[in-house]
View 1: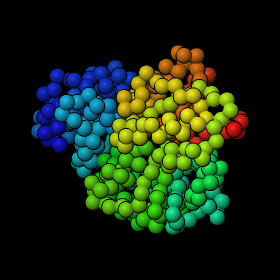
View 2: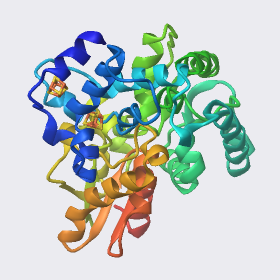
View 3: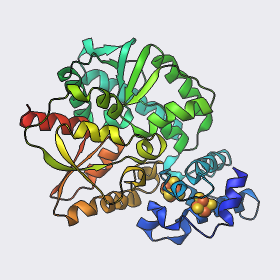
Length: 360
Ligand code: SF4
Ligand code: SF4
């Protein structure tokens, strides 16, 4: 971490153009180099640990676009998360995240109850072969998409149960809020639930990455196969009927799926069954963040919304249309910021709607 902070401090801002937060705000103090330099100066004792001094470290979605342009493969998105943990430990966490662990626990309980209310009892299971664990934003903000996914599983003949282990989230928000110990503790609980399934499908791009990479990094090993929903559907793509009339849709790559997990062609393969896929100017591993990561919608909600509108601007400029993504968080933020003439769908809903319009 110290090496990365030093490299960024003395860097001639090579990734300046890449940061969607600084671009959306027009603030030079929020370019990756400046955020890393600020954390470095605090670490070295040249600046104080105060709430205002650490403010820039919260202005990051962890989108990893800066890393894509870094010759040193530096990871500001991950280093700044570590800075958040240190800020919390020193009592200068973000005011919007005060009491976050308790809020997280309360939300978990609410979402588990919501999921149980919305899914037929016979579909809920504590163990099985393939389990669908939608993710917290899917349950909290996209229950229609959860229903669409279950509908789609049935239509393609996939025997999938809904994971009913009393938990709703794999814990990425805890890490983004700077609560590493609680993340590790929560990860242990999640691992005990998920190990009862051979494969678990999840529709949150950040938690897919957390389960695959951040759990092992924290010493929580999980032998269950973890698949993003797009990956699972891609494996089953041949079973998805083809739509008779294929509407043109834009596909938005979620940062955590594209840049951290390398899931690029799978959602396109699924969409191609029912739609004609059009690409954004910034797409695939060069995707532009919609503002949903890193808890930015909580720490800088207006900036997160600006980023989502900026992402959709290309569609607006082109006369409107439909944007499809494959992450519940991205779907929520993009929907919230879609102007008239632009509709946003998560992958399972997009497929079901296309099939309902007519399939071969
Ligand atoms: S991430 Fe790389 S390119 Fe960006 S400021 Fe740091 S060293 Fe420079
Ligand atoms: S990870 Fe994304 S949001 Fe964070 S500093 Fe890098 S480019 Fe900016």
